[in-house]
Length: 296
Image 1 (cartoon, rainbow, N blue to C red):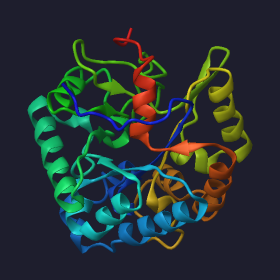
Image 2 (image 1 turned 90 degrees about the vertical axis):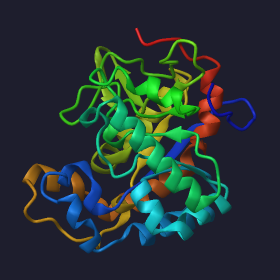
Image 3 (image 1 turned 180 degrees about the vertical axis):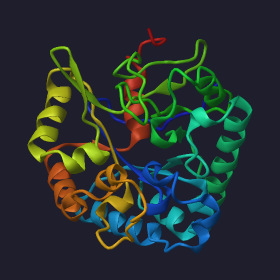
């Protein structure tokens, strides 16, 4: 059994999601910034997420905020605002540890701890989960079973591409039921196919770095050619051009993290205007009806 998702009108809904973490909690800096030092760093996640909530209210869209438990316990007012304004609050784990760095027991503990923090801060039930850095893959065959055991309704934790930091290329591109006998649905982040090539097209650094024309084409292709919704994600720090610079990180990491931050908000505003968006729990409910039973 899993948690029930709210009823919504049938139809194509693109999923708009925000992975709520601060600038120092990202995978690009995990080897150069120690978790023990986090509380001594400049915290900008509250400011940046509130700005995004203002933006969403201005343009009239609702989305899902996949939030770290670490953030929730420090910013309960932010959690309450997310829920009060009609957005979904979902889990992004406790402190951005990748799932493949844990065993099944550790993952279960991480899920329970983060969910408790989110629910205590917000007063609402959490039914959705996204793994940090899309880190559910072939190395974690037990992960979806743990999510099902903890009664999550859906996960959006798989990137069906090959990537140096993450990726499960053999996974289905669209919704699937990963656990036999469970209603849990996995909603992978969006990819686009052109001939034999499969490319990431679901947001984050790819959206920020690549020309907007590519992202627009890719999302339109998924909607029209595949007739499936887009799953789009980004982070509050991606609109913050004033965030601290981590000079001792590798050049590759710095390029990934900082490129085009100054134009990200304008691109987001354009994208939100040109496509239809909604919450991930609503998308998951619709996609569950045509999800394949198990990954091939």
